[in-house]
Length: 553
Image 1: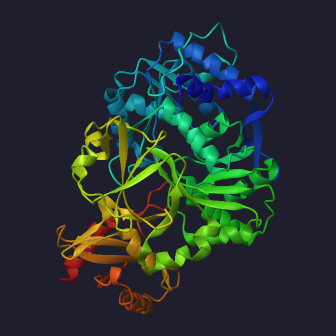
Image 2: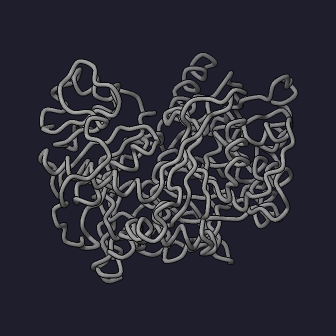
Image 3: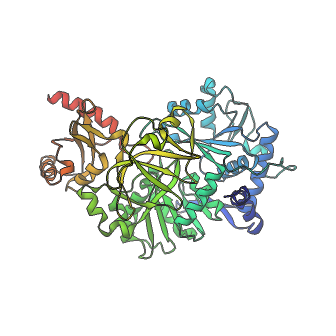
């Protein structure tokens, strides 16, 4: 991709503002209607373009320049997109983070980027004031909302009309840093991921290709980054009412209302949104005739949810289970018809969970399982056979080549291959003869027994099929290399614990992959990430199981 082609990709937002100025860009909730549903307002592409120009001008006069790292803690809203596009226009680097990781962890992470500008809602600025040492390099602040007990301008005070010409910004090189985004830290320490202008351009094309190069028309957006990609593709982005740190609290009635009211064609949502949506559609059958495609991401979507959505949406609708990460989104997808055509049964027999084929322009390899750094492929030794389980390693134009922080993450998480950088996902997979990826579990969560490793998802899918079981989690008790595999079990409401344990023990005798498990512990309710209520805290469960095991000994 040449720089000119790249810049045309990133600058398509301005083109849309010129060619379709009155097209709605962001449709967002503002108050409630008489029947208690959200009321919505909209901002056009021309209005968003001019607003972002105005913000860019003020930021420039406030000292924000190309390369200035700028913390952005703003709720999903037209304000957020106006700010992000303003920063992109002047070449500043937005720093974004998931507030669901908790205040102290978030502050610790943000301290590491040494940002010079801070844009946020009042609650975010309160943290900045309460933890001054963590933000001592900040020179420019902007409050989105009412200012409390600090100085500095508010976004409202700047207005929405550009004043004067923006400084000329030379089209960026594809390798120039665009944004720093933190991983959630739900399965390991949070890391600051660098995404370049070239990464974003390629990401736009990957998303467009995943949709069959069909214009998105109107999209329901529950993840801010997806909103940026959709705006670059010319979508009308509908933002339902939600709290970013607690996506699972989103009212499914509001999601149904938004789809119907605005004729939503495509939506991206995590299981935290899709599972309540399925329950709502089953309890209150509703025709969602405009919805062509549903993409799931953020956390693994249960197969029963995919099957349920298949039954309540129109037959032509496509439902995709997606796989990706902050370092690379998307990496693979699988459509519901293929997933439900015998692949779930294979998962329940110990094959792992099929997450589909790699997306366009993504190259995959398998690395022998190791926790050690691997500097180059020459150092990696013999490649892993595709049918064996190994660590998934990926490369492609939209895959991040480096971490901003901590520096050690680059040593452990990247492999140098000439001028290419491969990303180690930390996920253990195998690849079948059709090129489909089967997810077996996180490398850091594997159970290392005296007889060899056991992989969490591969094992859990076998037992999740047992009647009375809501979900399971494999953990190891003891010293790595001699761990005892223990299966923690969360029961369905009303299930008989004794009868369910009997069925679990019987099931363990039917498959070699799970035969070493002899201990089944009933847990009252798994610890999960607060944002998606889906990523199981296996590390916490392992400590709980160890205490239970000590008592029993």
